[in-house]
Image (cartoon, rainbow, N blue to C red; front, side, top):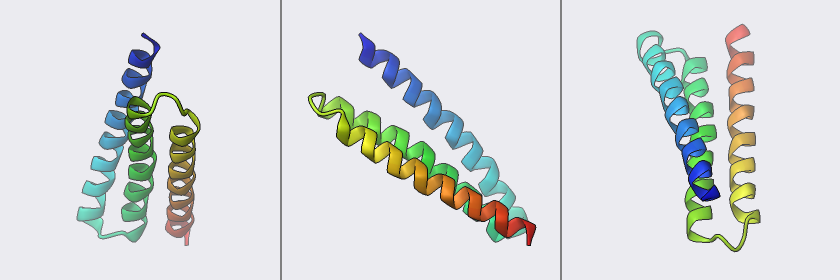
Length: 91
């Protein structure tokens, strides 16, 4: 039963992340700003990492460390890209 709550939470993260990526991509298409492209890429990493962790967990429920590691690394990468895009937008 707890896996259902985890799936729902990860689906919400994927949907919300997808909406952010969509709008950032539209903004990039209009402005051709590299910062917007990087922002979309960063949020895509965060959202896809959450989904990948859920998929890995559903197939391998005995080992929780693998999905947590995948999610943590993808979120770290995503947030680093987001920070870089924000720093690039300022300059």
